Image 1 (cartoon, rainbow, N blue to C red):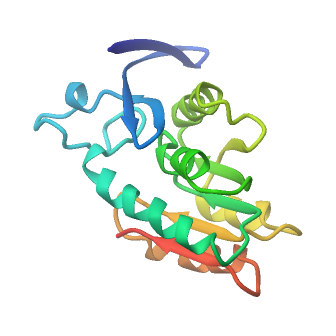
Image 2 (cartoon, rainbow, N blue to C red):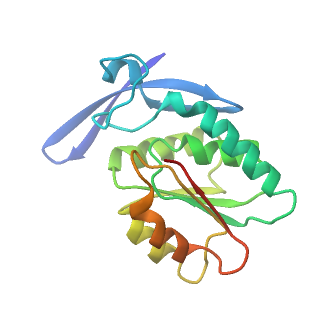
Length: 182
């Protein structure tokens, strides 16, 4: 199913996004239609209006298993995904892992934040998840003041190295988890 979303990006521009409904695990969500935006099918590009990489589903499956196992012996109250794209990774954590932890998702792209917010509502997670626009490193440091994260998951388009310092500083000083995808 294709959904065409017209978003008013600012006063003078109108952005058209071709979206598609996807399902991974127990989570249904919308994201940019990768086939529509890529020259080689199923290959996402940075030119997509909102990032989603279907080829990383197996990676997300393993991440879910890892966090679910971690939660058997450790408590997570607050997690953060600073480069959320359409939000699928965190949505899956919230839907498929035990516990009632809260989640913050950040992205610098206002269209991504709109998509994440729709996906939060679609998955009935409005009491557990929030999305904020801004720079990942800045938000990691400012949003963790006074309420450090128990779990941070960094999954960039490229290397996670530029985000390591801010991510480590945003974690609880005793007993936190940092997940990196490269």
